[in-house]
Picture 1: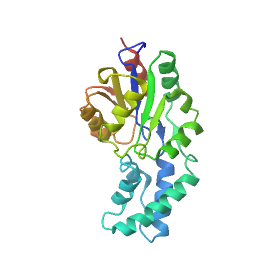
Picture 2: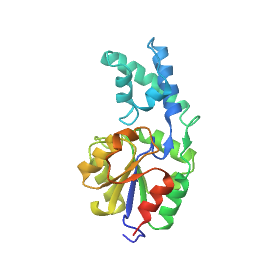
Picture 3: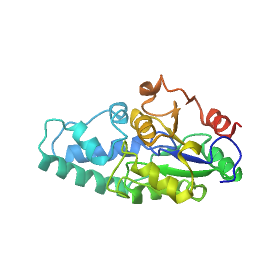
Length: 218
């Protein structure tokens, strides 16, 4: 693949890496919890639960509930979230520039997330980021989800990149573990939700501007 920089393919996590979606996720989760008679959570507590998909989010919020109770809260959560998917979310400052300059440099950019692909696409289009991306792999695109490496292999095959020229950028240990299992490089997005999990990551970016310099360095 023709490109400028060390990596030809950058795979981004979505929540906590490209877009701060915590306010909308928290609003939807707390709505679903209240509707079903459960206690609600502060946004900062919900932020620490994000990253493993909607079902796992509900399971973390209700560790003592039954599967049937999880199912009901999950359904209410998804219905509310679909209706309000990007009302309070925001793109992290500098992310649009990162994606634009990667595209101009010939670096393929993709997204790998555990969020359903339809919701992921809606968020990315709402903020004008989708045109910079070659593909989006959501939590329901494949039978497997992060930290399983299947999504990495799927995206690498789509863009035609080898593992040694691909890097995953994310804000959680789930992303780090996904990259490790796939045998690709990983860069910690320290502006995200779960940066405390990544203090030992060899590659770290404190801001999107730092990330761009790292990704385009020869």
